[in-house]
Image 1 (cartoon, rainbow, N blue to C red):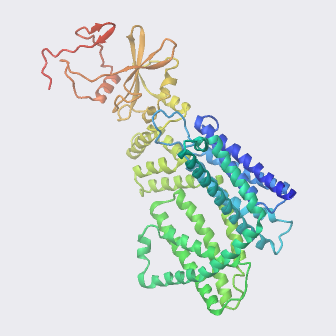
Image 2 (tube, helix red, strand yellow):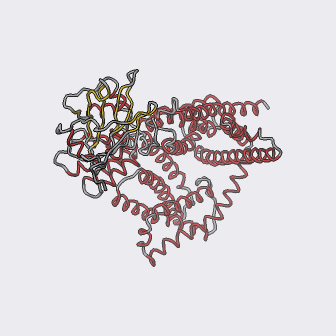
Length: 603
């Protein structure tokens, strides 16, 4: 009984810690306070929130102190990986109007995908480290495989219990609502109630499942029997598919565009069935002659399938270069190739009379090491898929295998922080005499125009804009006010004859004795911040007080709106100021502007 209470209390403690982290992250995201405003803080905490409890649940074979140390160690590793992901996370280039932050927890993929991938590493590593007792022993592999099966079933049982629990709560809430009692329904909708409850119920379900080894052992035995029955069918299908290539060829497979994905999934299922049926090769019992040859053929069929999948991946890389998804697919292909090679060697050994499945443990351990090492390198930074992809696409651009539009779109959608760095560099590159560089700079500015950059970058861009009349100085506070307008990033501050050239125009004595300022873009319109009249308020802060109206001819008729004409006139100092030829009307302190077309014939 004491052991029962101790296990339950440990799991509830872990669940409570996860609840605190989960609700804290949710609340900070709702209120847009730290750490939700900083990816380098939010993502590490999120990955810690996922990895530490999972490591604790998967290390149930270890003693309490060792279990905590292992969980904290993997949690620290997850946080370090999350720190790298946060420091290199991009900023959305499609921000909603009024968005003021540089990064938002709304970019779920920035932290959910790394957390799920790292969870696979925790699932593989935690039971292995928990079972280590000094030097490796012959039975350690079998215990590790059994622990993997047991942990998978424990987590599945806990997930099932959690689903049933919430199904019960929602059903009860619906019933109470029918009789006019909405308290339970309102309580479920409260995040301070539902988020902690999810983690606590899941942790308690894990503790119950861990203590009932009989259920997991029974399910493991049934799974082995079912997989042992299904694998011959999978082997025959694999052999039949490979033989069909001699009749149908491979052209249709490659033309589908997703041959590698389908092949990798099918090989994964075959290897999973082999390992579940044989406990990862730990069970090497006698088999009927027909079953032995079916397994031999099925295992050997995996090798040409992996070869074709690798060739299909290579074709996609040759045609379209590296992307983060393809780099992860390469890791999957490498892990599965190690396992398929082990299965193929085992098949040859079995065909020569050796014991079936005796080589699977070696290939499984090797594949697990490759997977763990690959995840650390890809998520941790040395082989960051986003950086490698940006370099690959840049190389394709330089060799004329990628258009400028496609390159900018890739940087904007998949490059994250690395892509944003390249986009920013393109806007500041000297483009004199280089048409491609000019086009890239223009496209990069347009890509950056729809996002919110950090204040320092925008302020630097504002201060670099040319000012007219020449020599005009920006008053205190105006640069900071204009620095809050992300549209400035689309400006070219080096040239005045390109469509996206911008300038700051000072209008002395425009409003009483005050000098007004206008930001103009050569091909722009009146969208913020262009074409708006900026004046200082009584407290010294700057804001927009008006804008430049429609152009009229000498007779007062509306003329064609040509922003470039006004822009060039300002640069050439050909702008004059004229008073209105007729007075406006004042009615109870309200101004009614007048406009006369007496001698004009306006269309």
